Length: 383
Ligand code: SF4
Image (cartoon, rainbow, N blue to C red; front, side):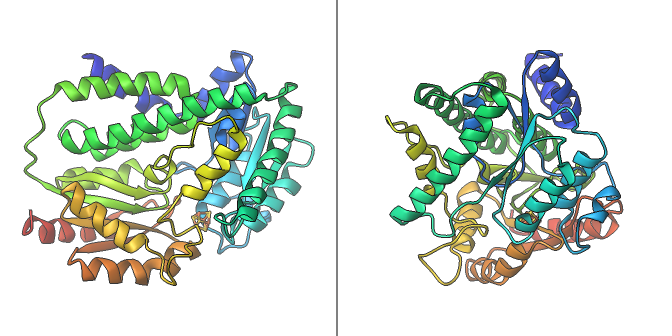
């Protein structure tokens, strides 16, 4: 097996087994903090000497115990995250952070608190609606200070400014490596299939970022040695909250559809923006949150219509893709409400798109398969 195959295999194993990663870190004597979506300052967890572990639901369970706490119209990501905490999958966690960016996560943060009881600390995190004004930055910093205090209690260790500066360095390096990877994945889409691309990016949520980045930089170096591929199929940009279902991504591969770039919350939206590196690291984290843009989950003061549509249309053109695949998470209000603006921008830019309704309990992909086959035919006329 070549070095590149070995690295890809390692990322695939991690992506498929967060529980095994949790066990591994616990056996090393480390404390592990579950981090729910979106935009929790993982750097604080790392700075406390603990392991942040992403909790984005799962494709391998059905909602059962979580039904007791959740309205049926909550998205499956939120419900299955709670399911994993209730059914013992994540029992070894030392705490969780629950951001509250959307109308589902706000009440869910209380469901997590009530359901976890004394089992583990639940750290509430509210981001400001307006993250740009001075008072918005101050609000973010106050919230982060509160998260820091609770993490210090769990870690039995004070987080110094130097710890935090170092954590920001580690995370910026990781974000740079992931951005480089998505570019290389586009240039080498014959090697980095949609499934492999997902596995590499998904593994970042379950590994300490310094370990992850070292491996990813090695993989990037291997990819950079290859000649840019002469792809005969079609290319798309993907958009949405998450698409980590191997069965769904296999349909892309069956139809020779490569992923040129993405606007997915679980993938590129999480590493588009670095934090500044100054002498005030807590302010740097708040600045980073302020600088996030083109995201349906975040307030956009520049326009009554979210500018994500134009941004995504531009992404399609710049990446050399012929169209966009939108993964529409069932019952996700923010994504559903912004869809008309996205469609308008794509139509104006003459970019074809297909909207696929998905959720993490999906087991039958027949309809998706038919839609993607038809979409591939449309795109091949433009390739
Ligand atoms: S999928 Fe949508 S509704 Fe669910 S947690 Fe994410 S943003 Fe909120």
